[in-house]
Image 1 (tube, rainbow, N blue to C red):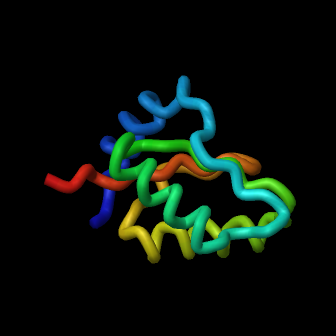
Image 2 (image 1 turned 90 degrees about the horizontal axis):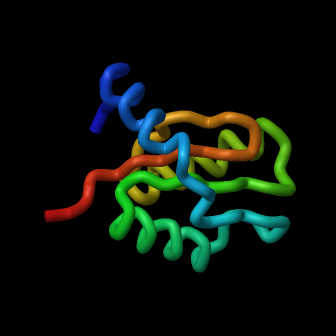
Length: 90
């Protein structure tokens, strides 16, 4: 699944008012956190994730792992916040 720039633009607009649903702390991306993100994506489709306690490269790796594991798309990453999208299953 690849999002066009127009779709990403629309999703960024929708995501602007969202608050982070899941926070990743010092323990990193655990199976439990990944499961919680999956459940939230099933319910919300578009969500913000706060990634604390990680440097820039580590944050990129965590975001990549989330997207690859959950078949999601990164819409935008600014600082410690990632906006992630996955179409709801039918």
